[in-house]
Length: 468
Image (tube, rainbow, N blue to C red; front, side):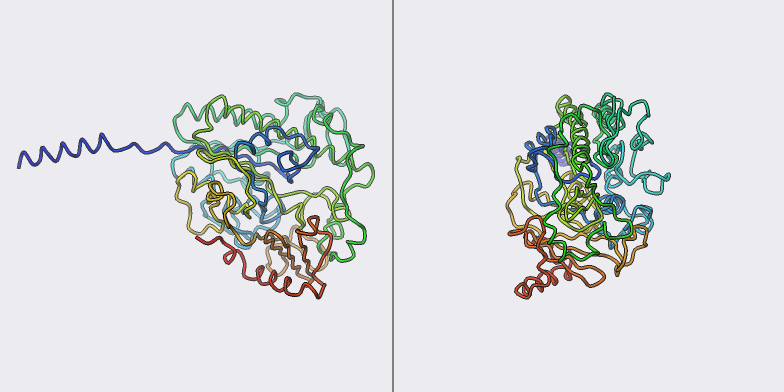
């Protein structure tokens, strides 16, 4: 018996010594830009200078067909941070608190915090303002929120104004709000590395959100005289329903027709400024040698209009420019590339959790798109879905959730079909009409396509998920 016990103890000891140690958990650097469309060099814009995001895209996977689920800040952020769609969160404006309806749902950073990560936020990740109404203290170990300079820089820094919303600063990057966000996030990354605990660091940049604030050197990159909006042929507006055009609604804001290049240049300057702050974070990744153990994900919260379709401005619409977003993921062990697989921002939560080996809540309504990082060309989602609040007469951003007042669009990679609460519809064929100028919804020869897209919209996101 004694010999048996000794042999057993020896076997246990040998097994313990030879068993492989658990692999260290991956860190996460999560970067969110505000109101950024895909006007980046890596997405094919020949004018915008975005060398740091271009570098990240060259290192990681660039998603060419990524879409938001609601083209307004608070609803979009509540959706992708909860992994739930706007029909579930019931947040469809910038006034409803994040947890008003989802209550104790475990949100993205909170999921990491509960499973042993040090979670850090600097800047705008959740919607900001009004105390804890939108912010989520339970998500973070360190929560550094925006101050007033994010939207209102010190008067002494302001050199001049440009266009509708441009603010030219006489200031160094590090003396601006977004400059602070980058440098503070970088310092906290380094501090976390020293602690030995895996980190989830979220850096939320306010730019290029209006006002388009940036130091003068970024405005100097762009000549307003060479920049023009793309309003489209005037005749195309006749077939677009009024409810689809926010500038025809009560709160709509039309893109300026007087010196429009000034405003475009200001938006581009804000992009280049934001890109430079991303560069601070990437330089920190280099210096600390974090690329082999850190997932880096960059995204916007929604797209942005700069005068398309007769003068659309900002967001609040269901066209390609506001629903499509830039999304770049660099993950250890994954090769760089480009994928045209359809993904949605609601997919970010399950993907980050999956890449880091975390258990995510079972009620998430997105899909882990990590397989696209391995095989970019594989078959994936059949469609993506975006909604926006309207009533039949005017745009009402403060209206409470009511599914009867939601405009809904579905995109299958070629066709976009949109249905509005007043009964009007739109159909665009991107193969022949990438700018969505020709609304085919009333053309008899497209009845079969309309019926198919209508069914795709009706069947919803569950039916569009990729085959497992």
